[in-house]
Length: 333
Image (cartoon, rainbow, N blue to C red):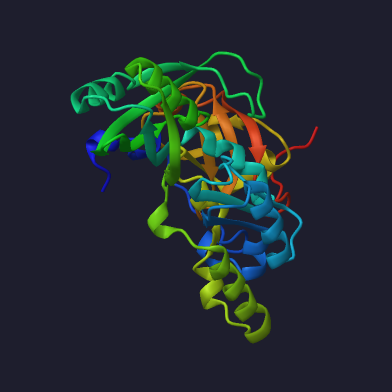
């Protein structure tokens, strides 16, 4: 259970609301947990614990060699010296990695001050950062160096020893922790830099569930050489688990293939949906078997979708499911 003070956007609790009763045809589709290893290797997700040393792109390259798959990508680049949670998409799951950006991230960092400062003052300055901050990306970043607003959800001082400050921070994706430490040093008039950084979670993707590169290598060897699926299934998860932080809309079987072909989502196709959905929310569309169909941007709130019987309720952002997985019942133009 997440402590109240350590809430990221992904920790928001929702209720599943039923708009209409519907059944799914067992002859089409498949529950995510019933997918074969081959299917997981084509559309799966790995919660990798990145080691100190390699770049995130080097890690991608090593995984391409280990898994024999050229379609490997990561979300949320970590510096070479930074360690911790690095979400990895395999195959078609790489298309969904960008939607982890709304989940929020947590880091444990070690900041070194350039001269000693009163502990109370350090705590005050760090707490003052909670909320909206303005950052300019560092010189060596890959993005344009313009001012940007980012959210700091929480900032806890774990320990202060001499000039070293151990902290935990929850923040919006795209927050530069190195820059954050430099800014703290300026506010304290002492100077400061980030000495070490470890990412502990990205939304619901947590360090305690992560695996190391060697674990992946061993599991894949067992799978290929001994046909042992048990280890690899503990490492590669269905793409849906990577997107568990998103609010959900469940649709009837007859609406699935239309979305796969690029159609917007119409209200008559909706069976269930989560509470607390607002207009323009990024939302995951599921089948009645909990398969990811597509990621959409809503045109209505939960209340509007529940109350109305017709009209479009969401526009397509990204298709996840392969065309033809469910029968085409809709009329083609």
